Image (cartoon, rainbow, N blue to C red):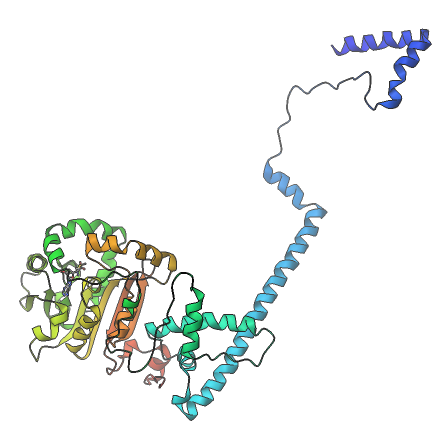
Amino acid sequence: MIARRLMSHQTLHKSLIINPTLRTSILLPRFYSTKSPFPLKPPTPTSKEPEMPKWRQWGLYMKTKEFKKKMTGYYLGGFGVVLITMFFYMRDRFHENKQLKIIQSKYFKDPKSLSEYEYLMFKTHNPQEKLRPLEMKKYKIYQMMRKEFRRKNLLDSEAIFNPTPEELDEWYGSQASRVKKLRAPVLTEDIMGKGRDSNKSNPNIVSAEDTTAFFDAKAKEYDDEIKWEERGILMGFRRSWLMRQLKGDVLEVACGTGRNIPYLRTDKIKSITFLDSSRNMVELCKEKFRAAHPKFQKVAFTVGKAEDLVDLADDNLKYDTVVEAFGLCAHEDPVLALKNMAKLLKPGGRIVLLEHGRSTWDFINNHLDFRSEKRMKTWACRWNLDIGELVDEAGLDITYEKRVHFRTTWMLVCKKPEDPLSFDEKPFWNKLWGTEVQHVKR
Ligand SMILES: C[S@@+](CC[C@H](N)C(=O)[O-])C[C@H]1O[C@@H](n2cnc3c(N)ncnc32)[C@H](O)[C@@H]1O
């Protein structure tokens, strides 16, 4: 084909030399068009060369000057962002430090002169102390407001953040005014530990019910239905932790079918009393206990509600450990139940809880809130309660806290406020120097 084209090209050339008119007529268009009147297409390649892999193309591109120039720009940009972030972070620490010094001098003159924010800030920075759950919740809201305050007072280095609780409440409420009015928790001496149930102020938590009839009906299938859920999240390890905390005379509240019994070491305890409001659950617990520990005699099984615990117990009956697993979510009045447990503690006794409730992550809480009614219907369980707040409202101190399963499973050890911390519970420095914990006064 190419040879034939070449040949016709040669014959045409000869005829152009012979006939000059033909020559001009053919050649003329060449002055006006860039297209060749004799297109000689290059032969199309028959075999394609293999394309270079992407990583090699990138490799070659990264060696070019153009890429290196661009990267220098990115490095400088990134460095600038880090510098700006560091500046704002350090500026924040500077203001915090400055305010802490003011608070310290105020506190040493008169502890009562501190505002609520100053008290919370001082307590946060005291290595010997931990904020209570409600205090922590409120302090986080103060911190959110403080960030906005700093942004607004960008150039005013003298501005000190110290709002009143009312100002905080107003600011917090304005943050979600289109959805619903939010309220910051109230922290006053006379309210803390005196029967205030702030969980009630959360509209997503369904109201409590007496769940006795539900669990009486559920008792037989309970173990079979719950076991896969528990195995999936390795709940056995958590139950085993719970049972390792037991010592002396023990009371297990809301014992259910006795799902903790496989992890119980009877050689570590003196006696154990099982209590549950559902008779059928207690019967199954009794069977399980007898099968697992046939020789252990100091055991009692009681049908009754945790809310009536003080009336149920004899005057002199006190316990070294009161333990409860996944019971608070099913109680009609969990705060009263906790207060009753505290009343039955011996001096130095502890309440050990393994409970499920709210997380610290909003996306988890949204899910818990969304499914709360369904959960109540299928399991008679209020799974979106803030367990920390319940403990706080019952006036108990938390000496150990661990949260697992996206922070929805709470492992807590609590004590009465008047009881001193044991050696193991003290912070590291107090253990080292053998000193007592100095609480921030209010
Ligand atoms: C979710 S189950 C947990 C059972 C068991 N502790 C466990 O870990 O599997 C809740 C239990 O609390 C009991 N319960 C509910 N309300 C109670 C109350 N007010 N006092 C005592 N027990 C209660 C129920 O009968 C049920 O056995």
